[in-house]
Image (cartoon, rainbow, N blue to C red):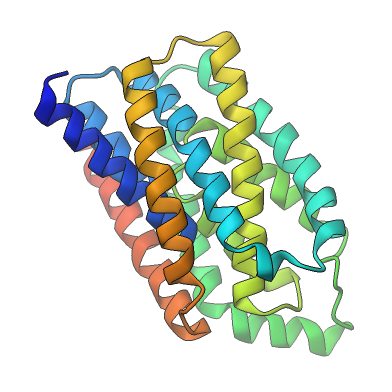
Length: 252
C-alpha cells in the first residue's frame, strides 16, 4: 500500500468503529475499501475482522454505564456469542466463497423489519405473557446465530442482535445497545483470535483498521449515548437498508 491507500484504510477503520458503536455494519465501511485496493475477499474479511476487534471493545467500554446490572445477561449470552463466532469462522474457512453472502441481504432486511415493528411486537408479546428479564429460552439460540453470522461476515450483526434483543427483552434501547456492543465485542474478539491462529491476515491492514476502529469506537459510543430511542431505531434501520442494498448490488 502507498500512503494514500493506507490513509483510506485508516479512515475506513475510523468510520467502521464509530458506526459499530452506534448501530453496527461497520464492516460495510472497510470491506469495500479493501476490495477496491485489490485484496482477495477472504483475506479482506479475515483482516477486517481482526482489525475491528479493538474498536468493538472501546465501543463497549463507552457504554459501560448502561451495562451496569446486566452482568448475568452478559455471561449467559456472551458464552453463546463466543461459540457462534467460532462456528462462523470455521464456515468462512471451509465453505466456498459467496455461499453465505446469498442470504446476507435477506437476514439484514428481516432484521430491519423487526427493528421497525419491535415496539408493537414487544407490546403484543407482553400482553400474552409477563415480561422476561432474561428474554426467554429461545433468545440464547438467536444470539448464537448472530454470533455465527458475525464470525463469518460481521456486517450488520449489530442490527441482527438489536432486533432480537429489543423484541425479547423488556429493556431501554440504550441499555440494549450497550449489551449489543458487549456481545459484538465478544464475537469480534473470538473471531480475531480464531483467524490469527488458523488464517493468514494482512497485518498492515489489520494495524490500520485497528487504530482507526479504536478512535471511531470511543467517539461513536459518546455520540450514540446521546441519541433518543426513536432516533437510534431510525438510524439502525437506515444503515441496515443501505447495507442490504449494497450487498445486493455487489452481486450484479
